[in-house]
Length: 114
Length: 150
Image 1: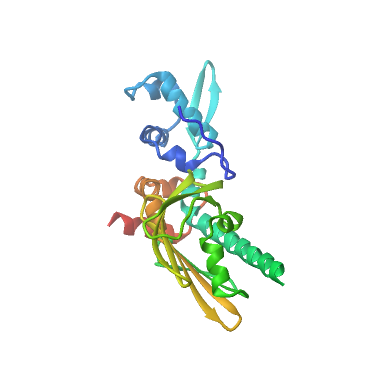
Image 2: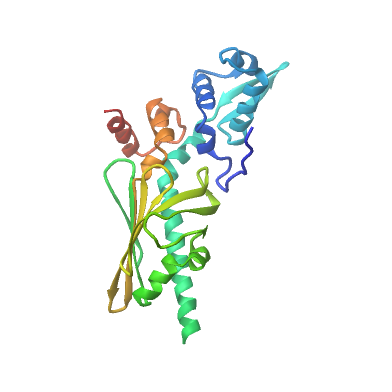
């Protein structure tokens, strides 16, 4: 599994959602909470593979797990998906910061010259 | 001095900024096209001001999952226009410089942003997630969802 550092926006939602299996897991969990075994039954992949996908979703806080008896039930937490909408706003902030850094860079150059 | 506007009524696709710097256009141009200068204010890079040159920026801050942003120079018109393809999904960054009495007016346009995250956005809009998200989103987003679906 590819390991990725956490972004400063928490877990990386775009990365989490970029994978079709994880999108399918989120779609399933949108119907209600489920344990890993019943989730894994619906995919042509091993239970550990599904657990790894769930681990990524847990890290991004798109999914929460709670223990009931011997089972862990996974539950959808859709709030981080808002980041996908916020993404353009994120770029807006990015360029605002960068253009201000450019201003600072140019100011230092002026001082060097004078 | 700084303003940002958006075009389009749906999810924002383009960003526009305008700044006036008290520097000569040649100095601003150098800051935009010299690899070391760029690294100082924008990001680490292997940029060269040559049309067709492929380069990348390395982002430390984490914009989505793009930590390395592959780019390609599209237009170099010293000291007026610099444009490059940003990422792999059809987004384009253009800088336009214009001498003004106070120095240099810089216009920055970043176009085609929604394309970069088209997959994630289409999925979110297409699966009724709008209604599932706890915090109510602005009405523009559901309008965007309808327009995307058409």
